[in-house]
Length: 215
Ligand SMILES: N[C@@H](CCC(=O)N[C@@H](CS)C(=O)NCC(=O)O)C(=O)O
Image 1 (cartoon, rainbow, N blue to C red):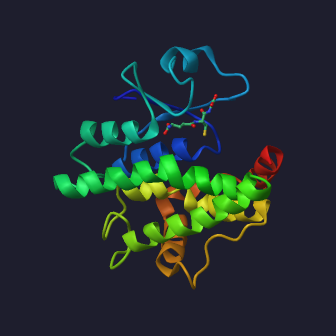
Image 2: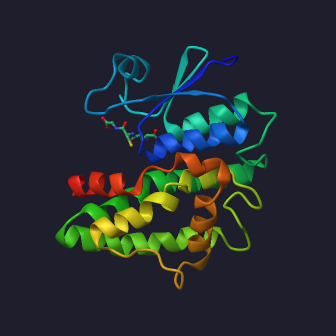
Image 3: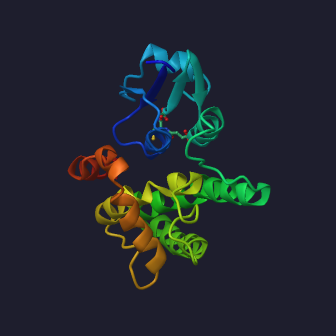
């Protein structure tokens, strides 16, 4: 393999899948190393000694950690094919802002709204539905968060296309419906059907069991 690209990830991690999608969009060949997080490999601990988390991208022997950082690394390293981030500094800042909002706020809220219990779960559900409105607004007049083509922000939000309905089912907490979130619902359908990503979707039944166990 000319460029020596390896990706440490798990079968289900949304952070790992972001990187898979970015590599596929760029047409980069890579080897996947599946980690068991209950028994992390010495290589994972060596390459990500700070957080000890997947994903890790290894490029020519050098590790890059944190999925959003990895997306930017991929975009800058293979910059002649399929741009992920906008060129315009303001649009780039906006994309980074919403990706950070997703990781710091939205995803944790949705997990709590689905997998939490009691008052904490209900409070998270209310906040999650409020915050999902911001996401819905980002799609106004656009097919993708990136505009006419999938971009960095689509990859950051990509977990929703396969995980939201699993979390809704496990938590018994409906979050997204076509009436309140028409653009986001449509985007989730389109994203899920992208032929390039089809092979990457984790098995839904396995995900249900995984999150039931969390709960
Ligand atoms: N902010 C990190 C989050 C990555 C993350 O949370 N990875 C989880 C799997 S989904 C992990 O490796 N967890 C192992 C652990 O916490 O020990 C990123 O964007 O890469």
